[in-house]
Length: 307
Image 1: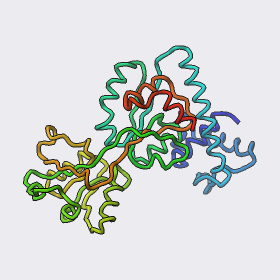
Image 2: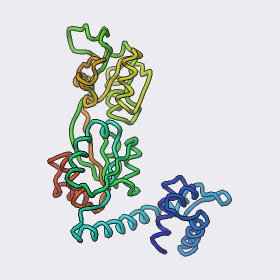
Image 3: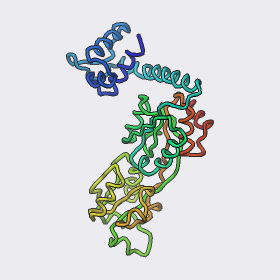
Image 4: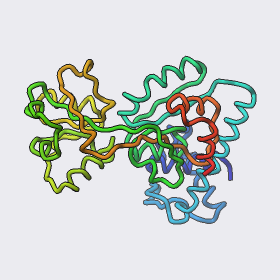
């Protein structure tokens, strides 16, 4: 057994069991990957993958049981490399941040700018995806840090820390009837119009659905998107009333829209920072986290990583 074989196992799962993609990702040949996987299975005396002919179709039950150990061994090997790198006193390396669009677009830019100024020799990689995809990036080692509002806290293998609280806002065209109300907007007011908001699983969407359900109000979501800028674009076209994260709107920037507070309508959201339990973080990763959330210093983060 060797680490390269373990990498093939992990990458096969990550690539949807497509060995051609595995070979391309790890810069080797597809026959070589197949041979190494077979040799590992023969050494262990089990079949790790189920097959249809020569094609991998998934993990067998024994393979699924072994996968956490494979990931853990590869993580510890990576920890050793990164720790030895830092013990040499070097401040170069790589940091991978996974975030939803809202966090990448609105919450992280100033942090990224400050980080690049302080650590110019660190290569910073920013990945975007759904909260579920971010969690998977963390679990397989593709990302070091994830930032999202939903889903991260539901994974036992992840340590999550609260970053900040936020609410939703309503966005409408300048002549919309909701602007004529002499009182705060109610859920009943909103339910009278077609709505444009986030896709399920994104940016507090569950709190929006829960509020209407608790009030027993039928409502119509005519369009969804992952991106607040996309939502605002279609609101400008008068296709519906938008509900977006408050951090995603600015009166000076969004001059074609009007903004109404929705903090009283939907539950407050908490953006969380996710880390893989047991992972070793270089000093510059702790620095990035503290730049983003000053209360999350190295002591607090280390305690979370150690469970």
